Length: 422
Image (cartoon, rainbow, N blue to C red; front, top):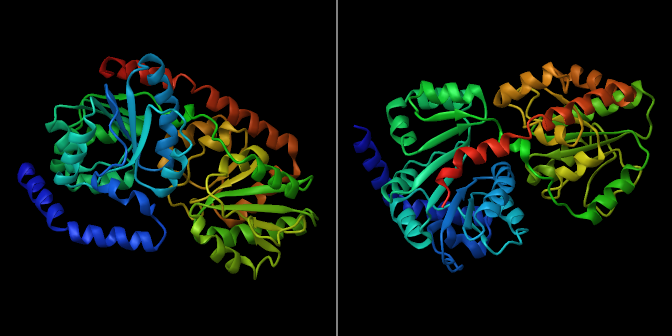
């Protein structure tokens, strides 16, 4: 039955190629694609395949991509002749990958989940091993890789509650997909249990590779501008915000300004989707008139709220602003990953993080994070961190120490996959 369904899925993927092409064309018009590299999605590459053994790492988007960097460096150190092909699925991750200086590491876009495309891709790149990151399980791609007798390892395996519920309806089909993996290493014990409940085998739990991420590079001239705007002002950051949260942040800004008598309070908002930046400015201007885009020529030291409209600068903000509210949590929608601000020693405020249950529990126990339930909680939590520096400092130190305690995850992961390396 499962083989028959997979066959139907493959046939439909071929039939719908014209529709996929139309969707890609629409994405070009929306600015979501790099025009010169569209053909990569259909396994046409401008880059010549290097000689020798090659490991393919699929990392979907920015978060997964960043989690692979330390691991890639470790692999290259042990296997210096082995080439690395890393694929991602988003424009922003591709732009970050441009910073790769090692000629033995190649970036391409993830091929379409289509038998004709993936066969062409595998015949061209001929990987000796595939490392698959996190949670995007493309049935055709994984099935075709297995048919080429290539080992596949799932790293940082993630199975959210929502994904678990959805896959549970098609448990028989999921078992077919997941058996393509020779080894599954999950990011949490909860994920490990969810995979087991769905019938996965050969599962191990090590921890989240994102704890071992290296600091991101960022534009120093942009940091210089940010520091000048911040100066000696009291400041807090709303990071990776989602629709509706910016209004809450703006209201909290006014309350903080009034309650703490801070005429020079600065609030920085970094939306999860920077394409919303202009709309956010328009939306919250009725609450706080003095709001500007970070790249605006009219921004000044008197601007009260800055909305960042640049790509990949979150690490820079974490290094310069130590009170952070993490978005996607008011109301709770899964939350954002708290590891990066914790690594940078930030005092973190967040609603429920159902996507990071295990990390959330550990951070609460270790007093690394303040948990809030509503809009008023955000005001009081921010007030405490901004007003009481010694109180905030304890959270900052605890957060940094918590991340340091996870430093062996990279080594443990490498030990597990070492025998598979070519």
